[in-house]
Image (cartoon, rainbow, N blue to C red; front, side, top):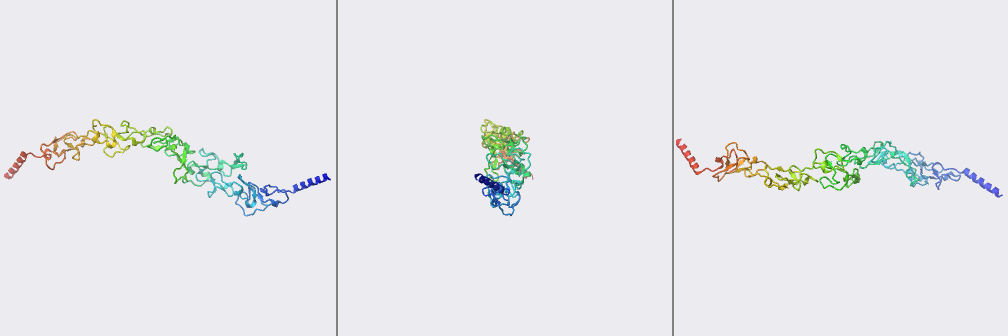
Length: 460
């Protein structure tokens, strides 16, 4: 009897197993299993995890309008798994709930959204400030890959994320620009290269190794040279004491300009830039930033006739503004501006002349500039010339030309009148500065002159 009962139980279990029905593709019962374990297929009310219901439409299409029908409706496998996906009632198991619907890194759909609503095939664009680098990372030479946002590869981090067996391939991703471009825009991946999407200009004053190209083709770290007439100042601006920074091609820092930081968060740092020379050097050349110091790249000579504060050295080490002195025997009569003004050489240096600050170096203090005896410059009063003795073009008032012809300005003298005019005395150019014009007549000369006048009247 016991043996018969056991046989009956085994036969019953076998018959029930034969009658058990699997749920439609991707569907499950409430516990998430795809086998109902019973004859009633209507208990297939859920989608399995990593499956979604698309309103009756196939994968990759817009959701249809069909309601989920237990036992009939199928659920579709996700293209990319979602780590926290779970079995869910069919009516709620949409794409976003069950699957990762994020576009591959750096990509977007036509409206710029980083999520797709139907399929990875919608993720056809690189976002602004992202570019397709042929499957290679940012900063490397472009790879040979063709842009394909649907391409998936085995998850290299599967051990830590076992729920996500496949991830987007590098050929479906766009990589971030090192430096953003203000007018970068959404662009189809096949057209979104480094030049169209990113600011690929070398940092200020730098160039790539040939020294003539100022845009990089792979990475900002290619900009290793200072351009002609530019030098590296240790991270400090031009004309300041050199900083302590080491030249670092590709250095990026947070944008300090609050007005543009949101759009361009990272900018080249000071240690990746070269600054303009104040004074150009005739044989300057493009040079590695590590070697491009002030003396190598720039003219360091002070303006003509000037020196630095030691009164000896005619070259500056930091800035033209160090050139504050006139040399001994040089002068500057206008407003002196350090680093810009030149000092003029005296025709004859004054005995004991020394290097002095430019504002103090007048011709009177630096030069032996006395006009020859009895002469003055064109203003008629000053007995000191500015640059050349030939400026001494007149005889002083009450002085007359010592020659009647061939008078040489700056060399010949004028003779003081023995009898001076009491009024109307003026300085005159040599040709006019006769003794008669410049001096008062004697009493006898006046008597003789009057006598001649009377005789003339008498004879008439």
